[in-house]
Length: 204
Image (cartoon, rainbow, N blue to C red; front, side, top):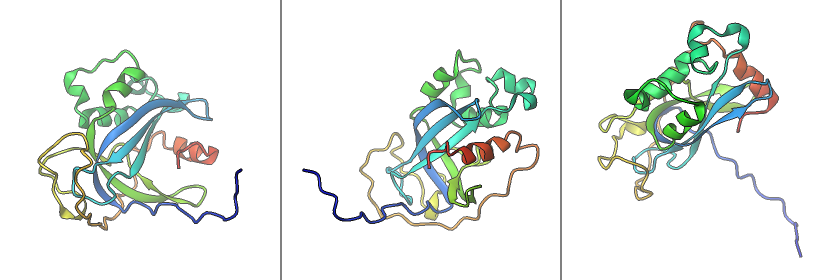
């Protein structure tokens, strides 16, 4: 017998505060969008071996393919994706240090999984009026450093590696101001963000 007698309470999470977080890439895959193009979709897990806010919470990062009419030669070399965004991701994860050629995006995704980076989170209202956490693929991704401060002025745990689920110190929140909007040169292809959000294709 199945009985549904009481409406559940709202169990939604509050927004992750703006600021810097040490994360690792838990999942990376290519996904089709309703516009007919593809995006590189990544799920980022906030590390729990670092003393910081929102441990084990998830963030999402997408890098989109450009529309055909806006592709330049650099974009074509990386499957039509926004070259600067993809290059920055592979640079801060250290993947480019081993070479610059890859057989497919599937190979890139395999290399990304487990990589640790620092991200700068800010809040932005979508075309649907909902405020969400955002990470700028160009300006919001940084290489991790064992001595770098993170949210609340804490520093990284010297025992560097994949999350151990052992660090349970109380986290401090921070109040960082959102980064400035990208310049025109940085925002090529950002019309895709509006298009995808209106299609309800983002994982929020």
